[in-house]
Image 1 (tube, helix red, strand yellow):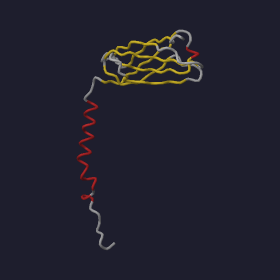
Image 2 (tube, rainbow, N blue to C red):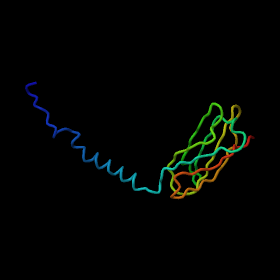
Image 3 (cartoon, rainbow, N blue to C red):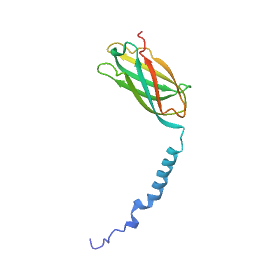
Image 4 (cartoon, rainbow, N blue to C red):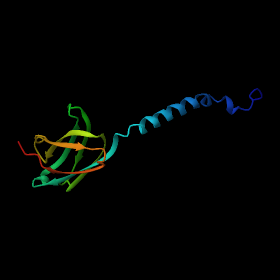
Length: 136
């Protein structure tokens, strides 16, 4: 204990890395803020028509025009879905295909329903109607 002096905070190893950590943090902040074309959007699906009370799960797949999957979300329900479903997503302006897969209480999932979704720069809240996918 006699040979140990008081620790000097100026020689702490973290202090040597602090400029690098600050630089990385600043870079991430600038990168995230420099892409204004990607806005957080709310897509609201109004479930219209008969047949929704039989549905117990819905899967939404958002794809680009090239077929690239950019968002996937699954919802499950005990006794059918509510009248409206809301999805929060960060998508740039453009046209997308939304594939909606529905599964009933029993049996395989129904064939997908494909909806076209076009987003402009000003669209932060988008509301669309959705009918239940038909049975096989």
